[in-house]
Image: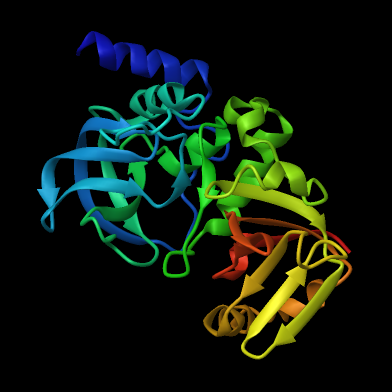
Length: 270
């Protein structure tokens, strides 16, 4: 047994994560191949010892870990990116694991999109969220067990574990428009009360302020509206409710987040 593996086991035991509360794989996922993790790219991507279905890497679906440059010129290192990578190494590096799928199985880069369960029974995504070393980052074609993941994220944020004690990852107040105008092009979680909700042609707009030309708003296209409808949620029903929305901040008049699927919006209080 190598020194790295010994240290990893000790680290996992000390963290209470082998297995840990919250690390149990949720139901509803499709089992896939058994693999061995040869290396860790960053806090949400690993390299397999042997390729599966032509893919050498696994993108841990549903997670967004702090980013490293990874060869991208002038790309800034996000705070705690190295710590997030080390946390993932401690959980999975050199270990046997099994792939589980809950939606699209590959991304446009040819990486597998999978959940990982270690031979020791640790759900890797759940453990990274439990430690506060990643955020939930879902897609319309990969939404399985996102509810379980959001619950783990909420617990870590409440306990201020990992990234949640760093201001870079703070929840953004929808009323603080000036701060958000400096964050265009970044992934954010924004909380506020929906002041206005309306459908204009094929789009729904949820406004978090009185001035839709300046305040942050959330927009849903037709496909997103249909996806909300399938879950029994009418987006216009968010009117007057305090909500939390996650996504990439864009400039459309004021700050804007496009919601493509229901899990991006959480109702906090009526």
